[in-house]
Image (cartoon, rainbow, N blue to C red; front, top):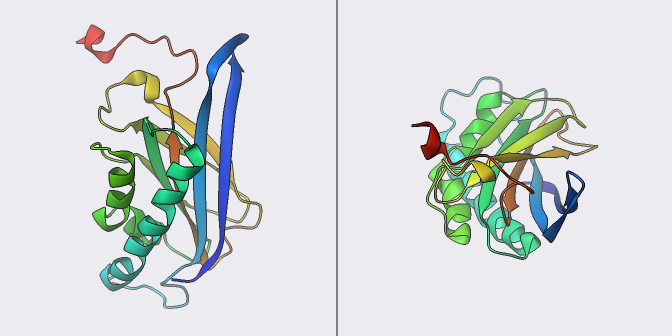
Length: 183
């Protein structure tokens, strides 16, 4: 796995809707910009060897970093893969939609739910939103949120941006009724 760079973003929301948020609502994102393992190979029918080689290393690299950056217990989480223009969306999907990647984050976050995801093909500098959901109960509406991310110089055409996002809480000032009220 060839990593060009790792980027860490944190955000602390102190006010929402004109009201203070106490304690501030913190989110963290860690992104690795890697060389696409299938770059220059044309159509590759069997992605499994590349997935087996790269996905576990990515999960091991990113999961502890995002938990550390958050600096609090993870309550909501998500993942992303943005493939450069010379790659296929399937390249990013293959790396993040495997337990070999996601279980590193599930263990670090003490989570049991599926990791929500975004995957797309795009040019460097594209904006993408990483969806987040509660780590143990995907029906908890207050934790359905997203965080916007952009990397100015990535992904290059032969790269993939792979990321994990975490939140220490639900949306600031969340007021939606529980899902059970609609059943």
